[in-house]
Amino acid sequence: MEVRHLPQQTTTSKRILELRQTLIKQIPKFPNNRATLAILQEKSLSELLIDYFTWAVRYVPPRIRKVHISPEVLNDARWELNRAGAQVLLEKIETGSDVTAHLSTEPHTRGYTPSAASTALETEKWADKDFLLNVMGFHHFHLGMELDESGYIKRTGVVLFAYATRDEFDAIALLDHSVFAASSGGTMSEERKRLWRIFDDRVLKNAAPGEVFLPPPIATSGHQVWLVQRASHCAYVIRELDANLDDPEYVLQLYEEAGVQPPKRPKIKWFFRGLELGLIDQQAQVYFALVKAHL
Image 1 (cartoon, rainbow, N blue to C red):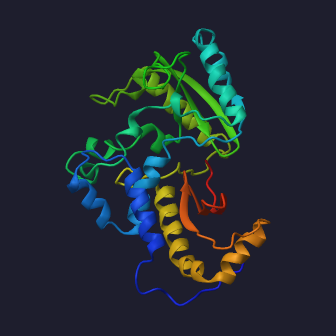
Image 2: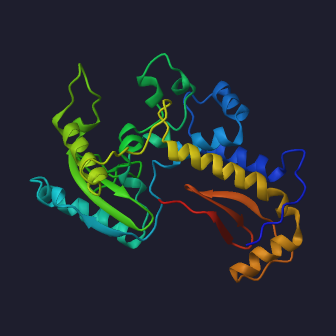
């Protein structure tokens, strides 16, 4: 689509203000008080998107995905004991069903905390982040067969680690909860060592002998660098295109290119579907994806 650059707006539009308010409301804050809210409200759009993405990436959006089960999983003695629960999860993955009930419940209440920005304590910066997800890119899923009173899968002793993309789901390992224990006194649990070995094998499998390879970098703040870059890019797209949404011809072109009959009075607003940036007309039930995500 051709982007017509209209004169830059001198004030923030209602659409961007509404987007900011929506993002701030969605991110679970702790402590959930006026001081935390004020900090988020004062952030630039790029900074706010970093916090939003860091929280949103902890979920796996419902999409139809092709499932791969690694030999590491199939050869694990715990596979047979957890096969039934795993098959329930994997069937949901293959059919594009919601798997939120299988994920950690932490992101529901611990999305952002001001203390994570403090450099005083190394552990504090991970208070609102999933360390293993940020460093390795692996989500973990609970394999229970029953729901608890809150509607989430009952916690079990073993979790399934997996690498999820938009189209693929690689089940890579079964591990017990000792994998989440941070290193103490320079040592780490055997399960954590095993996950690091699996991670190293995955990132180095296509590297030539002697080749220098850098795994996905992490900022000193604990944020994934690619998420920081994505936040900057999405903020740029929003700023560049927002004025165009006041141009009736540009808006009409959106519907025409999507093959959708435009309503008499289109009402488009900015919208994030997980990590994906788009525009939505809720009344017409039309969504336009602008910046797609890998997940």
